[in-house]
Length: 399
Image 1 (cartoon, helix red, strand yellow):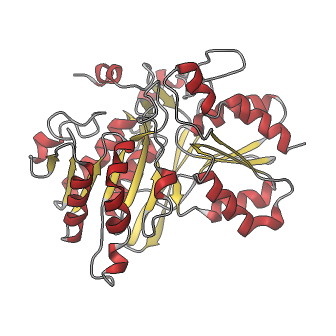
Image 2 (spheres, helix red, strand yellow):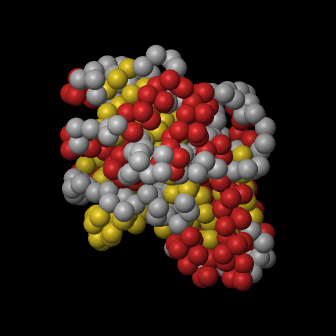
Image 3 (cartoon, helix red, strand yellow):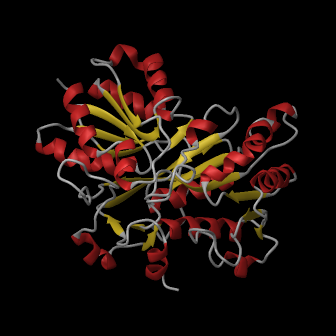
């Protein structure tokens, strides 16, 4: 089955999209694992989105642009986001024989969104292990494997299902390095699709970042482009810490040209998506594209927003965030997480604690409503932040 045929099976938009005007900057950095090559992307994201109505733009993703007709002459290769995740996983499995995958239907079926397609055939059933429908059991098995020296990648068919494994993630995955007095490391990656899709219902629209952020010892990152999806996947696998990689179900068919050369991103670094002067907009995952749609309207209205994809949900990259606040003196946080106890609430608290003296206006946080996600499409749209709300918030904060 071709990638275009596969894309039709996924819940993301039917037309893959292209992120254009890509420039890569390489630099060396020293982390806990020694010297590493860190490649940063400076990407200008196309900002047109599909709209159902005049004032309410729903399910925002970047639209296909003319760049799609000229990318063949550029270096690198084009991949959909789920293919970029697979390529990163494949490269790490080939490089390191201790890397293995486990989860429901990750084997010969290739995963619910085909991230592991073909890996069972290439590496065998022992390294790509199909499990029963028992999240608590196979997550615990992955943690045990990590304790004994393997580097497991555990896939949740849907991130909401991993609530069944919350005990393992909290009491074992996050704490065992501490409670064992440093005798054990837990180099495990827990990943899977989440977020509000298109009429997936309340149970399949969970955003687990709010649940997991309070667990000591756990790192959390969220990918938003094929480029950072691959780079974060590779970095998460190589990390000595347990890492949760959040993937949004509506971004799997996002297409981008990524380098042919190997690259690894930092797990603790935000991405400057759009430089600006008037207001700092902090966002991540799918909301990045809602924000960029709103930014197009804001520029036409005379505003110059600075957009940062925080990427690292725990810990926050307060260096990048702080430098932006010192320049703009205004902050808007846009998230798909719930308002109560969400990432936005924690980020707002961190900004107040560290950069209060640089703020010229109250911080505004736009989050999903504290309600179960409705199945009805029209109601679902109203529970999630939309570009028109972002525009209104920037106008309010810049008065």
